[in-house]
Image (tube, rainbow, N blue to C red; front, side, top):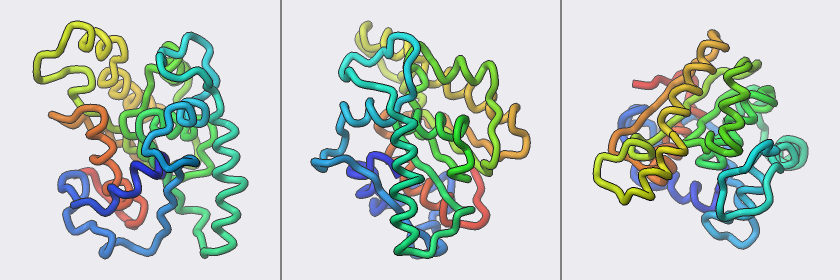
Length: 236
């Protein structure tokens, strides 16, 4: 679970119905280990650390007006699977065939990038509002060429409808910003590309009405835990 200082406290919030039955609370789930990964300092969102660790190497202007260092996704994945995971395996009896990755925003971008480029490290993925606009839609361009992956069982990819198609009036500059990033259009297309290229993998797209970008973090954390810890899950 990426952005651990923001996401992990929400695991204990009141569960929402919808994607998984309301009974899918921590007490009802199978045995598992939730690993929330934050950054030194404990801030909910460390913008420079997120842009450095969660993004692939850009090949165009990033579109990020806040941060300045990008492209560390490969090194961060190495930390997760080659350093952190063995340390955890020394303490807990982990099942190497039951690993789930949850990420939101830039963390969702990292999740999609890992699914497509290094899928063997996780079997289930939840990408909440992934920043597919990054670097002139780098990941979209790659998926249009080849969205095939291997060794993955499940992808849930989500976006709030208000992230592009707001239900209330916005200042012109804000609406232009949302239109340029095209979150709903990109994520909808990405789900279709991945599903068609991987017919044996279960792919669920959720476009959540009346939800904006940050809503999708809360929307995802409990549902992703249920997906990770149940043997059979659904997208009802």
